[in-house]
Image (cartoon, rainbow, N blue to C red):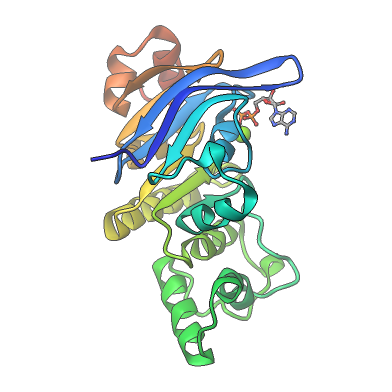
Length: 247
Ligand SMILES: Nc1ncnc2c1ncn2[C@@H]1O[C@H](COP(=O)(O)OP(=O)(O)O)[C@@H](O)[C@H]1O
Ligand SMILES: [Mg+2]
């Protein structure tokens, strides 16, 4: 079957900074792939290339059979309905309560009846275990609840691919674990393809079917978390060891 995401010799620079230097990457449908690598190596850039927020300087990117690297903004809108991006930091609208935050993308792209909308928002809140928080504002939520509300919003349009940028950064380990369990159960229940950028090794171990490791502009390794920790290149093993996972 055709992969969900495919990069061919993708190059992307900012000024004279060569961030991606000819990247090949394939992510199959239904995989949960964690992108690991040092800070500033281009992990977020990779996610933004997947949903067309950035374009490559050269090379090609195919997502759900669409050549995203060649589409214009209008054509990209339909891709972004299928590819949900959970930004670093979550990013709820502070001036809207939880209900309106989650309803927002739904109302932007359709016109459900009030009853249908209410039912959908309730279903989404149940998926992320936030029942009963409809009337709360982001400032009234804990960090973990904000992440879950943002995730409910990201799920509102039934995406086929979910991109997570550091979903557990800034959370305590216990809250981080609940987010990890949630990502995993969403994957199992909805069968989505997920790409997770993170430094959180326990999260990687809980959710990733495979890791890829970005270093000096290329993916230098691909394997399961277990293989990576046991027999990956030294740089990759060190990353896992520093995160508490030793061979
Ligand atoms: N819009 C931009 N303009 C200029 N430089 C950028 C931009 N986006 C990313 N970069 C640079 O590209 C490099 C990779 O960034 P990023 O993908 O955000 O790193 P990370 O792996 O930590 O997510 C960094 O050096 C960053 O400064
Ligand atoms: Mg980043």
